[in-house]
Length: 323
Image (cartoon, rainbow, N blue to C red; front, side, top):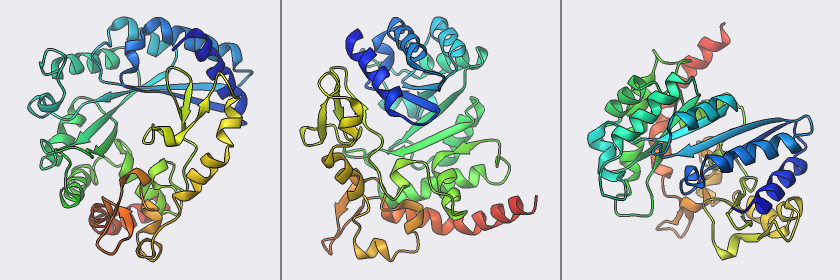
């Protein structure tokens, strides 16, 4: 990304947000390939245009380039760092290899240890695939052992190693059983946390579980703005920040319609007892069922996991209400 595009983006993004707290999320590809100097420029520009607002930064990385200099920078500027790791070495190295075809587990663990030693806040992102989907308890125990206090689990889609809804649902149940009850309030699992919020009638904050979407736009290195990181295609290209202000792009009719279209659900969803927990899930994951209805490909997984978890949510809620 050129210095011109970077500055225009940061200035536009801060000025277009009425909130007093602004979050920048850096992901890719692999964002650390931009180099540390790029992020030093970014932070300097954030400070230049902050205008009294509090700026937060998070970065999602494979962890391969995180040396001590990176860790010191993250610590100085309060970055939240997301590390992609799929489980113990025999699981992780099956899919995550370097350009020489060698597993990256050792490098990732070294990076996590550096982050911990430097007291940088981090979380883990685990892709659920055929190598780990039947080992939920082992994966949870491993992530807990390496110090992860915030865990994200996302299913692999669109390739041969895509998991089945039944396996995904079982995996999340295994994760829940490993977490409950001893790690409540100590370790946070994104999907479980979001579902419990919905149980407590608190609006989910994760875009895939909200009734509407459209406020998670992304910018590419050349300044192109797209509706969402799941829809980076010509149909969902809103324009370029070098040619139009960000606020103008956000308020374009196609983007407004994109956000509202998430709520266009078939009757089977609108009458579903689990609707408030998923709101149809991510539109990218919708497939046509045998009745011709567009439903989330992981609908059965959500139902399976929630059917199991809801009685426990009731106990957790009662316990919290009694305090």
